[in-house]
Image (cartoon, rainbow, N blue to C red):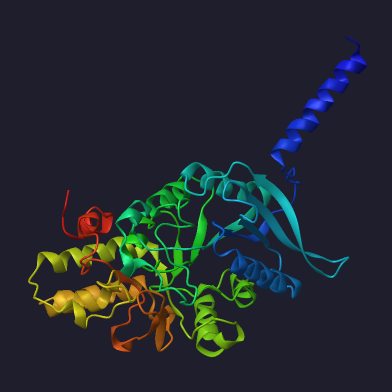
Length: 402
């Protein structure tokens, strides 16, 4: 075999493997100030995902990303494939453009391995001083996706209801990731996301947040359903790329302000926007305060009188503070819990519209009793999945279960 023939075979092989990987070679570049990944698994919300990407493009075109970088991963072709893009400003065209970085095939959104690979690639393709993560999809708090077979009619959105982002796990049916899997993927990364924004329903849930306490520093999430339109990314992006670092309180305000005042600018939407910010380093102290209450004198309470956050029957998500206040028979213990709750969920970031929309049963608006709103839920008062709930890390540590 001649040298020229051997060279030709090697070149052909290299081209073949490059085509199979469908991946751009990362170019050496200086560190960005901040890189954000928007990960949107599943296809049932694809219409809204495209609208979300459009919103990011508008923000980038206006210069909102400054010296940062924005990556987007979603599944436009199939559940077995995912595409990683960068949304960047093209000075020559004077507009935001999409640059495909990598195609993951096969991609399994329900597996820790695929999600970890994607999250790891963020640092490889867009190295930065800091990293942020937004997950936009369906969600159902702590409830494992394995419970889908146990679901009753009360857990199914009403036919004809407005679209919200609710289901078990993260993602579409049959391709859902549990919260414990997400925590495992995040904690194993070579870099750390300084914040996680859940553009999913019911994720401001104490059982969920507690599982993620060592994975990220801050979490923005909603205690109830998020409308199909999701976050207003054209308004959020400038806050995440602020000159002195991500302004998460302002990002919470932008979400609330949109659903309070401008929700009608999107068709099939509702004036429904509840949000909160979690300081994860305070969650262990909050668990200790809750454990003190459960170990002390408690009293009977009426679950029907508590603030709930969906229209299921029976309810699954109740306001955490409303529940603790109802059961605690020791004013001093409750005062300590409330002080710690305010450190864990800063009051300025606990925002809500007067009511919220629920697609369950007979989809309707549900009023919020403002005094009861803490921006975070618990499933402990629920009569649904009680045995599974006792297996959550939050329940075990707050009830001294080994």
